[in-house]
Image (tube, rainbow, N blue to C red; front, side):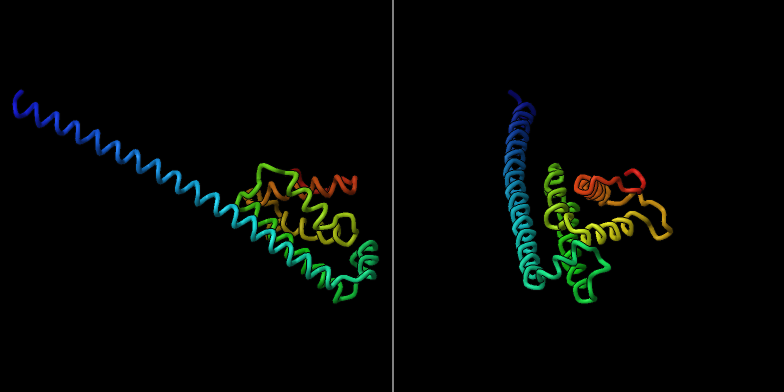
Length: 177
């Protein structure tokens, strides 16, 4: 064997060794990223649940049996403080839900979002359905009153609409999403 052939052989072996090391590093990096992704998802889930629990506890402390009766009658029956309590609870719960949607948490599980609308946003109360409709229509329309088809939350809005229609049996008179 000549020196050139030996050099080519050594270069080829070195290239294979370097490529193998790089491949192994990629496998390790993928595992590390998978672990980090799972940790981030777990953290996000726990944070969402903690926020919901605190919001629900706050709401339970503020809510009275008289308020619950008024919720059945609608927004017009609430005084200013009761309306503020309702709006604060609704906004906080909606924000957590929208953040989960935006971050892709359980996005392939539509039941999760529908149940949150039905149970935590209490669609069985007229006042909650009314505040949902106010927010839904506001979010659906752009600044000029036109539908914004680029809306990141379009899928979430569809699930909210479906949950509302399932609970009430009414069809919402809004553009098809």
